[in-house]
Length: 181
Image 1 (cartoon, rainbow, N blue to C red):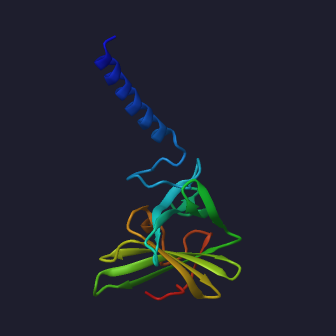
Image 2: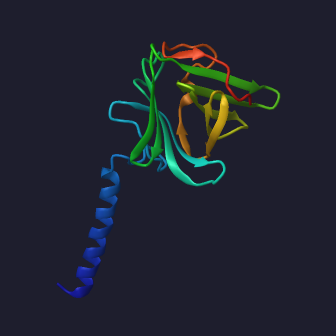
Image 3: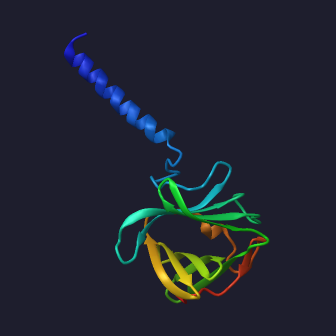
């Protein structure tokens, strides 16, 4: 085979190999290139690339994964960490409920929905802006005092299908957010 044909064939194989390795990755993006910590059989309600507010450094993925696509949900899992490495996992169930809340201002067409997972003195509050407010926020509290904050404008979310006005799933209870909007 001539050299130029071998070079062209090698390039095609290289491109094909790179594409195949991306598709085979267990953290391949669900949509829009955002990885997920959700496992097989779980439904991703949220995947977000999180930036620490103080540093604006992206390296963490936040995923909220549930047992089914619609309420009533029997289980939702909060997973947070670097790509391929879950650093924190919390499970909301009928025995260990997560708090849900909605804040809104109809005059300005803005709002915020939140899910809070508690573990001892710590609370992990995940919020999504609605209407003219956009983005995902994660605030971590210790004894109700904020200790760290993350934000994202790169997310795939279907949190709006959850009833934040009245707990429709046995894993949720209506609460007030730690940080009013």
